[in-house]
Image 1: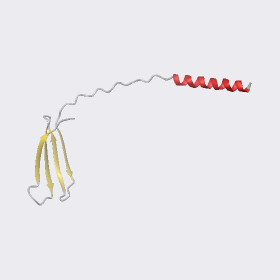
Image 2: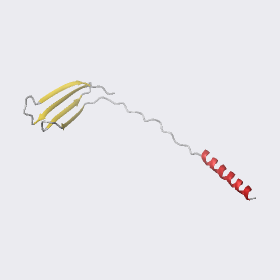
Image 3: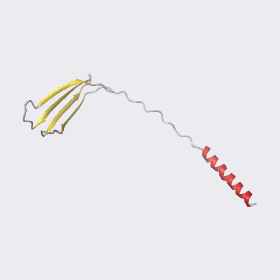
Image 4: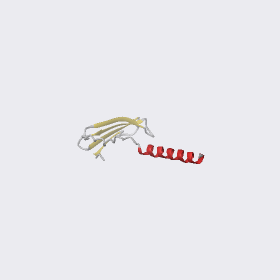
Length: 94
């Protein structure tokens, strides 16, 4: 009799366990966010970069809408001339 009660209890517990696994709430799936169109616009950055043999490198970087860039660098406290340099080129978004 005890054996029958244990088997019945195990069957009921197993049944409830299996029912719990199948009773899943629906999960809302989110659609991927729509990426906003990136439009070219001029950007700039200015700052002082570290320098091994001067007080710092005052740097300005300008990114233009047409895909060109210009960078100006001025070595602060430099003893040699020229202490300012300009460079330019093209860039592309990847």
